[in-house]
Length: 176
Figure 1 (cartoon, rainbow, N blue to C red):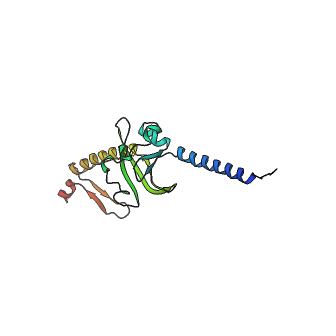
Figure 2: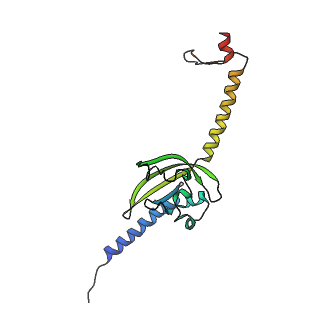
Figure 3: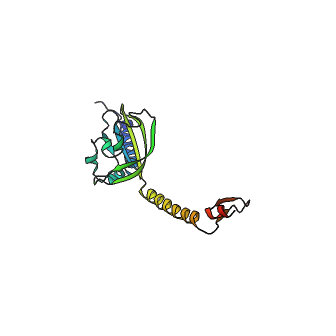
């Protein structure tokens, strides 16, 4: 009889399973949406649960769809990496949910070679709250600007460190 010591192979297989489980856990639990897109077909090949939740569909209904179905709809045939030959893309875009809702996102896309094929790794985060806050801030700034500029009272904003006038409203300009 022949006896083979399989300890090395068994240890390597166990290590590989642990590594795969570790990477799978990272992919699924990252708090940003992640899409893996085939460069040749532009089809989504994998999606994590954060992306699935934002899109509002189960993974099975997202995988196989063309990426422009969910993100960068206006940029079809103008993909920054595939069509415009950028190395990567950091931009604000709109994610289209299954219900047709548009969610503003900040995304990062980069090219990667996986299992001998070229893929795009697209990571995006919902910035809806930030966009709402910016809109509220802009409206507030506009109200205060109009109040200061159109007030009949003289209003000066002075730098307390050097006494320099940094803002004067119309009434102050007319008076002085």
